[in-house]
Length: 408
Ligand code: HEM
Image 1: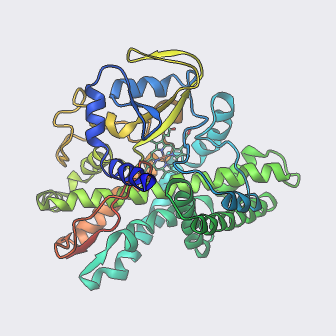
Image 2 (image 1 turned 45 degrees about the horizontal axis):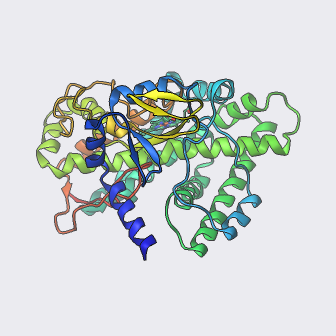
């Protein structure tokens, strides 16, 4: 019972962490938050400092799971691949090694070349429900487009994308949601299936490289053309799984949250509809105001003082991009979603410093093309008031509405 109460409290906090952030920004020094088992870094200036001082604040445990796995689930995972350190969870030279192929594969030119495909996919998704007059947009659109786009980036056959997307959501559930022991086993089996799917691509691209991110990663992380060792396959599959998840769960979440905030006050939607040139600023505001990745962790590598708080080596910090973006010292009316706020890319929704998001342009482009398309195809879009108010999913890593029922 006590455990259920703890979980309920944590879910509540995850659904709306903003009051806690605001208290932490006002408090002296850092605030220790037992629910996070970490020191909360809440102010814009302090978040920037941690992200820049990567030597003092390690990323090795950036993505610590929220739940512990049962013996049974732990017994399933070795049938798959990994875990191995990836770009998000490595530091220094190891991080640069992982990062180099991502920078190449997500260059401005590469992203621009993906956009016609993204636009076609988005248009076809809307064609699928436009005549209905109502839809649930999380399932019908937000959870679909980014998977198709990242699948194309990696080089997945479109027929494999639904399985890859399913596997990505199951990995998130396994590590971040309290499942029953049987639920954990089933999720672990789905994750193993995803890893075998990715391993097939890794081995294929070793033999027949193509112009895709999978081939770029194979060539960079396992140079040469000898048959891949098992260890290389473990590393490549873990890295590809990480890229897949980083690439679509985030963007899907933010498409949902952005649409929610634009529609919950119909004046915002009317503004965009009347003047679509506001779309880039509206996207930037959506990313700042209620971002998908609220926080990642860092661990101190030595004793340090941050914001006046002394921390020993090995201390865990929760670095809250989502709180920094509401810092009143940096933004006027920071809690307000204002589509006319002059679009500034200075927020921290995509991180900062060496681990800053290499996919931010691809994410922004998908958010923009979604609004361009929806304003044009469904100008009368509004929340379905006959449905309960959308509720946020209880998570800090892919914050989004659970469902978004709309009519037009
Ligand atoms: C709205 C969508 C997105 C948001 C809010 C977001 C946010 C972030 C943030 C905050 C980080 C920094 C992590 C840290 O400080 O440790 C990050 C890193 C990363 N993102 Fe994104 N991201 C998004 C979309 C994407 C896309 C579309 C891709 C790729 C296709 C991507 C790939 C990555 C990767 C690989 C990293 C790790 C970089 C590193 O550790 O060096 N993200 N993202």
